[in-house]
Length: 526
Ligand SMILES: Cc1cc2nc3c(=O)[nH]c(=O)nc-3n(C[C@H](O)[C@H](O)[C@H](O)COP(=O)(O)OP(=O)(O)OC[C@H]3O[C@@H](n4cnc5c(N)ncnc54)[C@H](O)[C@@H]3O)c2cc1C
Image (cartoon, rainbow, N blue to C red; front, side):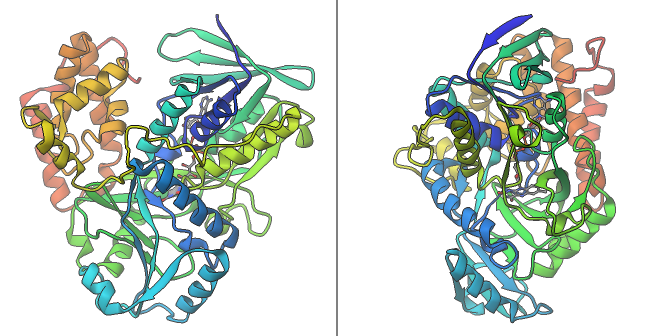
């Protein structure tokens, strides 16, 4: 068994865990983060893409509204390259109560969320696809945020401050020494070896899996309630501004432009197992109807991909456990020395991706307090994008710009997302044992209109040549990639998407006979 020794083990490589490991390392702690799969593969890779202005919560959850507004401003400063400054509108549709907009404006003032009412004519001028019957429009500072760029930025910053980030390390056991945590045991899923990490503190940032982790330490299951939501990416940018319905938060009331697509969502259903999240067709229809209500003709656009994620909500005593829609989005730190008599372990839940930095500050403050140490948090001051000076937000045309600057002779691998061979090879060099899905998350490989139809086999070929993997692993990776894409395709198979899927199938089965290519004895899963 391999052995490591550290001050703090952070469990979970989503936005919260990455924020926490960065914060702990910046305060001078030796910190190791362990994640059972790739970074941002849990809820953080399965969210809506909205950098909240706070507007959504000004009436329903004022505390969360203020936190979102403050963190929105900080993230734009420290992680500009992960944010697109789309701006946002809250619009009152024809059938909605126009008086809610007054409550909204009052709430925005009280919570410090910048919001200005604009004329309907101005809103329609800027977003001509909006339903022309809208009654009111309020402008807010929403943005679009790339969760994977955000977590990888935080990971690089944490590593620059001395932290270790171990992906594909699954926690299997937490050892105690009397009433203290003593070590975390992980399984290195790629190397096949167990790793024992002795430590003074464990920070449980496993999102909707936090209850499972707490149980491994012999603590009572923590009250994290998975609230599932589905989202659908439409095949182009139907809007360039985030569009929210100006109503009390409900299903399907937000449309977010993210890179080359726009994403409609979401639902909120209580689930018990965050590893098995369905995408029911009835919810797909509900989302398409919700999109149609904001943007007439929405259903004529092609739905490209659907997915579901599970909010790590903290049980809220005000509502029933089934009612995840109305549970607070506020964050909470659970101190296991208080709840279970277990020292050296804290769990965090709730919150949003937008507030990930603040969540980290809270839990690391709580750890310092328990250790009786005063070490100030500096994460809001240090810019993460050191290569992005002066700080620039990303814009939809950035890959075209880069290409025109110096990449015209670089072969394009993914036409939909303008991903070049050089970009792919650089990412492969950084993650030589990465799967095509791991590289997809960083590069958007196969995330555009063809959903991998043309680019994934090119990528598998390059991984074989450049990455020096054998042909069985290359074709195994390709099959795994196609299988994973399929999970988000079958619930939306209608209209033009059926044609695209049939074309992709013809390419893979008709020309490549992908089902019968040589593969390793065991299916490639990681
Ligand atoms: C449908 C939906 C839409 C959302 N939309 C938005 C939005 O638009 N804007 C916004 O700001 N927020 C949004 N959120 C909220 C946001 O996505 C989450 O709050 C945030 O991503 C949670 O991050 P996390 O790191 O706490 O959890 P996760 O990202 O789930 O990370 C937990 C990690 O723990 C790992 N893990 C589990 N078990 C183990 C183990 N045994 N060993 C090692 N690792 C383990 C998991 O693999 C996972 O990567 C949305 C959430 C949902 C569900």
